[in-house]
Length: 422
Ligand code: AMP
Ligand code: MG
Image 1 (cartoon, rainbow, N blue to C red):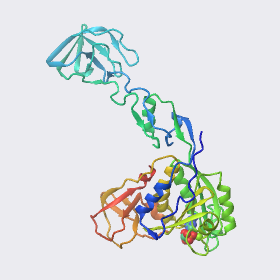
Image 2 (tube, rainbow, N blue to C red; image 1 turned 60 degrees about the vertical axis):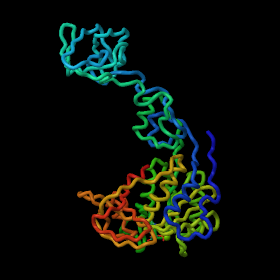
Image 3 (cartoon, rainbow, N blue to C red; image 1 turned 60 degrees about the horizontal axis):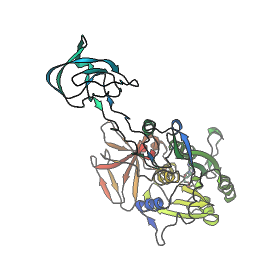
């Protein structure tokens, strides 16, 4: 297997003079710079669900491979005219996997079962429920169209057809198509290893200190477990890189340990320009850092950096902003790093159940869900620390940069969380 190329040193750089980046521009800049960083391997079909295809795959066999019956019944050369039709039955029968070897004469019918190859002389099948059979003859009421209840060879896919393109994340349904078309192992990208770390002196790992023993100001690390679970759900290998204190040395040690162990890092917290924002400070002085001031809410600057050749997505510390930035920016970028295709999550225009006066300048993402009446409800508070709203919601409402005066019933774009699964 060939080692894929590393990302370019300036892969996250923005053109000079750019300050606030509109979201669309940030996304297209990110899209241009990402490419697969994982090697390929061959895996058996049974283990391939969720993997990303490393090559275009073509059908090695047509499906169905031969014309066959779609029902249990009686086969003959169609069509059948209007009125009562009666035919002598040829001896023998055609069953799935046990073809009838002889040929059926014109004017004769033969017993045939679902999936059986159409014998020579048969192109039309009448359903057994529509037939009477007695004394070696079958009778039914016509008309019946030519080729009724018969499946053509290759009507699903023809040998040589493109089945699935490189980059496709394989679904169970795709695995069925590959199996039916003659594949038993598939070339896929090895899972992208995504490391997740949190930073902040106030942050405590869940379980490390009992709630009653926490000091004032300490809070539990909600982001790391959330992001680890989320990247695992996306088919990446989630690697817990731990918790970094607000110190350069502690953070440097964790990032150094990550090299060779993971292919990309998600960090949360410490990415602003405050005194204790060590992630941006360290990447800026000892790695490579580009701070993207993206015009979205929630989400303060997004720090995109390289630690050696390891891409680092520096996310805001607030759990809501951390998740929103992960979904919007890290998600498609990770997909491409993993060998998949860049994608935009599918959204739907649905009537709002809420009113909102939105100012111009930034895109906004609201925690939202579809109510019983099919309208989109928004979480009562837009506060970026309100973790309860993340799970309350089943997706996000996206409002673009323009000013908007939304009243109930207006169409808004709702993006279900599931749309980020790819
Ligand atoms: P920061 O970006 O480090 O200034 O953090 C912004 C806010 O998010 C602060 O209130 C932090 O305490 C909070 N925060 C940072 N990291 C986490 C985390 N891992 N889990 C929960 N809250 C966090
Ligand atoms: Mg902090």
